[in-house]
Amino acid sequence: MYSCKDRMRAVEVYIQYGCRAATVIRELGYPNHQTLLRWYEKHLMTGKLHSNRKSAARYSAEQKQAVLSFYTEHGRNITYTIKTLGYPSTMLFKMWLDEAFPDRKSVAYLEGRSVSVPA
Image (cartoon, rainbow, N blue to C red):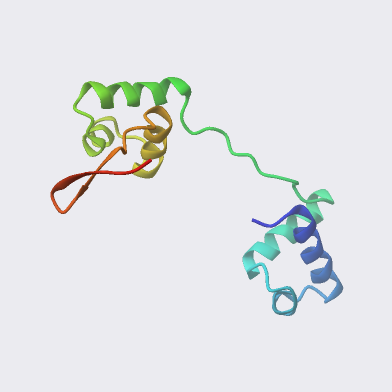
């Protein structure tokens, strides 16, 4: 992700070079053509670029807790939990599990053998 300063520099160079995206990208090494056009259009409409982008939480704390409760009450099976409830993604769910159960990775299964992983 580019800082506001980097984005503003790209837009200024784009304007300076007569709105030729290829020249700007070649000189700066960033961004791609579509991104540069989006930044330029935003600059034309508002006169500035957004300073940072914060996304809203996709799932509420209650939904997160419901998934974690279901997981613990139904055999601690990640795939079954996600397929049954329909959310979240596997990657996000594993992040939630790491937060909720930091010691859950104390045993790794390698080639069918249980091996303790040093902390």
